[in-house]
Every structure is written in structure tokens, then in C-alpha cells.
Image (cartoon, rainbow, N blue to C red; front, side, top):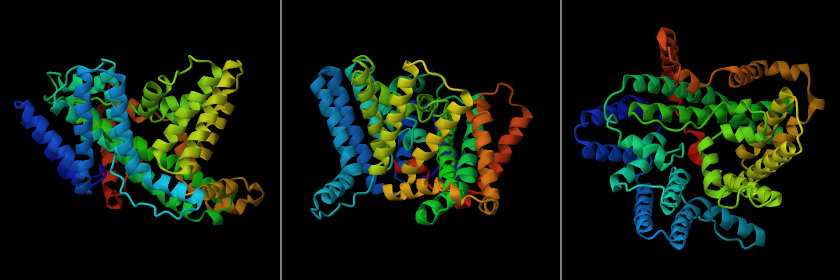
Length: 456
């Protein structure tokens, strides 16, 4: 089920909201109702894949109970290996078989395996819980609480990736099942901001993005830049829109999810970018990959190697393809260069630092979106053909170029959705603003499309 659909906004969400608070005197019943609703939400497209998430939860909870009684590193490794094997089979088996077949000319049949929705997200979340249990950081939680933690529908499909200490204390708060007017107001505010980002901005940009990446050999220099910039903003408004909506929905149920975006396109270097973009994924990779590998404690060369490993994993996590791996490689190299630059004590003017960072992000997103390395190079090649640049080409696409410029100004200078939501004095202006966004967004629901991060 999609957040940006009539059935979710006008049926599923109101029904769950009413039942949740109507059952506030029956906590266990409310938990069960919410879990069933979340599983229904997950299985709305394909009920056959329910067994994957249910099986994953059952297996991991079994490992949790074992680790609580016997916190042995071997048992933890087995638990992590089981999770990675399940993830690897569904997400990477076709990629690896195809790669090996092409590399050695074996002509192997590539299996057509359906990717279960959100498997990357709920797998990483459960791996983190296993590691925290091994470290003795988790407390005793009931099976219902654990299931709720994993299938909580506002963040189930595309994050943010939450940790146990952020969620369980809220579940157990005495005010959890009592309506909170402030939370409802804030929740509706950021939900409709996110809905507007998705339905009006991201889905409009999708037309230029899809057209550009479908005809990479026919792009001129202006088309190349429009394609790359349109995707840069489409991905931002699509994923940040989803995260805004997730935060808003969770607030309706008195749950505060961690922030996943903090104006990342304002960053002055690539390290700062990753502190602001998909923040919970970056946090996961730092705590559960980078630090266990040794972090920056084992010398400079090992630090650089650890950084590269983290970003290669990040690339592969996002998608089973060489374009994603290369995208991760690029960001790893950029992060190493950024670290070296700082260690040498070098400085750069802020406008130049921002420009270089933003340009790198735009160019690297091309690999993230392209269907193949060949398509990515075609787009980047088109972007460098400045000898073709004429006033006529620019004038032909003046409206989309002006629209992209406006979006650039917004992401650099405008208050982000979190700041708007947390404004102390809402007043009639914000109410009118949010109502207007809601009305316009709902009128665009006939163009329903999936969120981009559903593919990851």
C-alpha cells in the first residue's frame, strides 16, 4: 500500500487511527490490531511474500532469545549470516549468477526472483538488534513488542532504520495510547508536506528523468544537464517526502521517528553530505560496519580501506548492479579525498566548496539511476558537450531550466520540513499553508507512483 494513495489516506489510516485509540484500555489487543494492520499494509501488493517477513521475524527472535541466554560471538555470527543469506538470495542471486555467467561465458540461466518489499530495511534493523542483544544493550522485550518494532508500518517499507532504544521506551510510555493534539497537528503538517514533495514535485520531475534515461544516446548538452539535475531533485523530494510522511504518520500514534534528512544539498563537503542524507543508514553503517572494522583506530591506510568498504557495501545495499557498486566506489573515494584534505589543513571558499560538492553529487547520481554503465557514460558525456551549447537550446527548455533553478533555491535556502513542523507558533498561516499543500497533493493522487526507495 502506498502512502500517496486514496485507499491509504481515506480508508486505511483513519480506520487504524480510530481503532488504535478506541482500544487504548486494552493494550495487548491494540498491539495485535496494529501488527495485523501493518502486515496487511505490507502484503497489500503481494500476499505471497508475507512468509518472508514473518519467517525473518521468527528466525531473528529465536536468535535474540538464544543470545540473551548465551551471548556467544559464534551464535551472533550465525544469526548475521542467516540474515545475509536470506537477503543475498532474494536481492543478489540473479546479479551474481548473471555476473559469473557473463564473466566466464557459461550461459547460465539467470533466476527471476521476486524481491520482497523492504527486505533491505527490515533485515538491517534486525541485524542491528541482534548485535545490540549480543552487546547486552537490549532489555527484555515481549514477542509482540519485537514484532511491532519490526513491522511498524509508518517506517516499514523504506525506513528510517530505527534502533531499539528509540522505539521501545515510547511503546511503554503511559501516554502512548492517549491522543496528543500537538503530535497530531505536527504529524499532519509534515505528512502533507511530504505528500506534496512526492506527488507534485518528484512525480512531475519523473517525466523528464524517465525520458532522458530512456534516450541516453540522443541527449544534447542541455538535455544531459536537465536529466541529471531532474533526477537529483526527484530522488531528494521522493525519498525525503517518504520520510516526512513516515514521521508524520508515526506522530499520529505518538511515536517520534529519527530524522533522515537535514538539508543535504546545502553540504560543503561529501562527509557533511552523508551526515545529512539518509542519516539512519549512515548511522547503521558507522556503528555496525565501520567501527567493528576498526574505524580510524588502526592507522591511516586501514581507515581509508574501512571507508571504501563501507561505501561499497552502501552501494550494493542500494541495488544489485555494477552501477550501484561504482556509485558507492565514487563516494568512498570522495570521502577519502575529503578526509585527506582536512588532515592537510587545506581550506576552500564556501561557495566553491558547495559547488564542487553539489556537482559531484549530481554526477554520481547518474550512475545511481542509469540502467547500465553505458547509459551513465552517455548522460555524463552529453553533459560535457559544451561546444553544442547555444542560446536556442537553452531557450527551448527555458521552463524546465527555470523550474530546476527554483528547486535549487528551495533546497539551499528554504527551511526544511522538520523546521516547519517544529515551529512553535503554528497559527493560521501554517494551517492555511498545510491545507493548500494537502488540497493540491490530493488532486494529484490520480498519478499514483511508487517511491523510488521501494526498489532498494
